[in-house]
Image 1 (cartoon, rainbow, N blue to C red):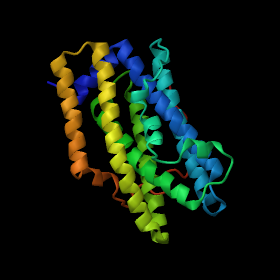
Image 2 (cartoon, rainbow, N blue to C red; image 1 turned 30 degrees about the vertical axis):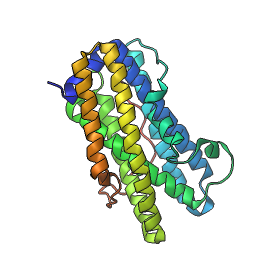
Image 3 (cartoon, helix red, strand yellow; image 1 turned 90 degrees about the vertical axis):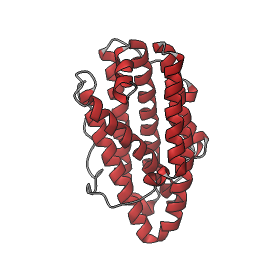
Length: 261
């Protein structure tokens, strides 16, 4: 029987699939850390109060990248190159979601609309990350090798999501509500397609590494496409609603250090 638990257990138990999984995760987190650090450095003066929170967000992402690197090192493995078709962050950027990297590389202040776009993009991608980590905690939170790391990352992702909700609601009250909703919807409809494609690519690589039977790979691909169909039909609204979080000022302090994994 196929289940998230059994699939992830297979990936963790095999050095080659585990190596690819951790490499993909580490690369994505490191890219997120760079993006947030650049945004924090370029925040417009009118929104300078956000800079420490964006910095904290970036520090958390960098920490997550180090955690995945440490998990590899603990097993005596080196990172491997990330196949381009599995690079979620790069594909989002190429699709025009979030702030373009060439803009972030320039030492020119961003404007308020840029920060709104950043927060909307983050609200969508952090929802995806929080949902994934919730699933992993449910199935592997007590795992002796990866459980501690998963629990810490999951808590951080929940904080990131709470921060995005709170800041976007603050901007909506300031008169940006329609722009926020339009940006969230546009971002989400692109994200769900990219997530589908990346999921298919990752499972394709895992299937080849683990020598899955053709029927198993086909069933997994059908499940991924079915999830996309559900999200495209209306499930995407889960990623655009805004509610005031129970965790207020979730990024108001310094980032925690990475645990010993």
